[in-house]
Image (cartoon, rainbow, N blue to C red; front, side, top):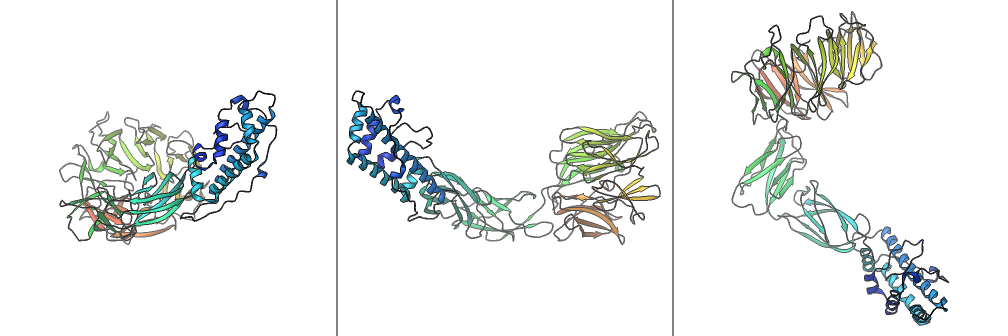
Amino acid sequence: MSVSKKPDSTAPEINQELLDSDMAPEMLEIQKVLANVDADEQKETPAELETTEDLPAVVTTNVGQESPVDSLETDEAVAEIVAAEGDEILEIEDAVRDAESETEKPKGIKQKLAALWAKPVVRWGTVTVVVIGLLSVVIVPTERYFVLNIAGVRSSSSVTVYDASTQQPLKNTTVRIGSAQGLTDAEGKVRLQKVKLGKQKFVIEKRAFATATKTIVVGWGSNPLGNIDLTPTGTQYDFVATDFVSGKPLGKVEFSSGEASALADDTGHAKLTVDKPGDQDLQVDVKLDGFRADTLTIKTDSKDVQQVKLAPARKQLFISKRAGKYDLYSIYADGQQEKLVLAGSGSERVADLVLVPHPSDAPVAYVSTRGNQTNSDGYLLSNLILVDSDSSETANVIASESISIIGWSGTRLIYVAVTAGQSARSPDRYRVMSYDYKTGDNKQLANANYFNDVTLFGGQVYYAPNGGLESSPAKLYRTNVDGTNDQAVFDQEVWAIIRVGYEELALSVQQQWFSYVRGSSQATKRNAAPADQQSRIYVDSPDGKHSAWVDVRDGKGVLLAYDLGTKTDKILAEQPGLTYPVRWLNSTTLVYRVGTTKETAEYVVSLDGGQTTKLTDVTATKGLGSTPKY
């Protein structure tokens, strides 16, 4: 049905399907007559208007609702549609009155319409039938949803699906509401969009589980359906997941085999339900973020609980001469899957070997004389290369007479290089460099004839040039790792920078000592020199919550973890010969070096406790905390 509308009307047209189902025969006859009225005649100005005050008030209510219930927004939406349909009826009356006022025109369609509308029985009977029909739409839920669905109104719904036997979320479970369908995520949750209103069939299906089916009423809004448990019907296999180093249970471990999957609870327990496992051994994939992915092979008739120990996903890097050359290897914390990453060339000198892996990514900074390059005087040069610990690919960064690794900051490696061939008295002989392993950008941050000290502190580079050949008085400078915001932070020549705490540096200036706290605008004078003038090397954990460092107490090396939140230290290991380098494999697992007359080896320890475990024997290479001064 199509009628001309008032200029300010935003009401939708009366839906044909609604008219066919709810309108009285008299209204349908009017509709047929109006369909023949041309566009020009419909635009004529009505001579007289009737208001909605002539119609009975519309009352909305909720009757016989199933869960979830309708909201006020549903009633408001229906009220808008009712109002719009009421406007349409008024427009019909206006059109009829126009026809009555056009007496001077020849008799035609309008005159016939006016004659029909002039009959009180037809006019008021039609209005009464329409109003009753619209009221039934508001009052009766099924009619209400019919109108909204025809108008294109859609809703949404959400549900979380659990395994009834473990109360753990079920992943990749099919959920359908009417024609809308979706799969649950790793947390067992799914949100369906474009769901029709009213009574709908609600179905949850997953292989090896009993299908859940019921009828629900979808109302206006989000329609949360809460938690639904599915009862397992297939064969179940039990697993317990623990951390290899600490021995503590690991939650959220995913066990999967084909379409079947299960998550471990906080105690590390999981039940994997498989539909018709068959006669062949079952292959079960084990995954947890931050840990190595493994595949288990178990007998299909096994009733035993499978004990699964997970190792960190990152491998430790080390150098060994077990095969006669200084080869670079990688190995997991549980000693499995050792791999040759880079074979030695035979030209490496053990005194020059430096190995500093990136804190969280694959690149490893490797300094050696493996390139067998010499300067003009025949002096063997050191090569700085980056080795990808995953692919074993290498990238040459620089060859220099001496290379000292300062540390990693983001994607940049900070190092100090002695320029090959430069005079010993050249102001450009020493350079502080910043290399971005992703872009290959190798940027000079500072240069001098000699640097008294260089350190990374709070993500920035602090450097103290020697004043011997400087054209201006030497100062302590600070710069960002990309070379921006270079500025002096202390106006005297600093002889040594000693890190005495996570947030504090001690600065040696002739016979005086000053304290510089991160974020301060200036240094303050100390009463005395620090008790321990060995600078601490703090190594931050990947999650940024802890930082590891090594101290010497009572003749033993002590590995400590500094908690950045509580600002306290926790002893993780005490052992004769315990020393740097120290490296995090994940946010709880560390590797440290032990060097004694009996062994040079690397050990594994966890923040969460458990026993320290020897990982492997290694060559005594240098790393952060053991790199020689320039």
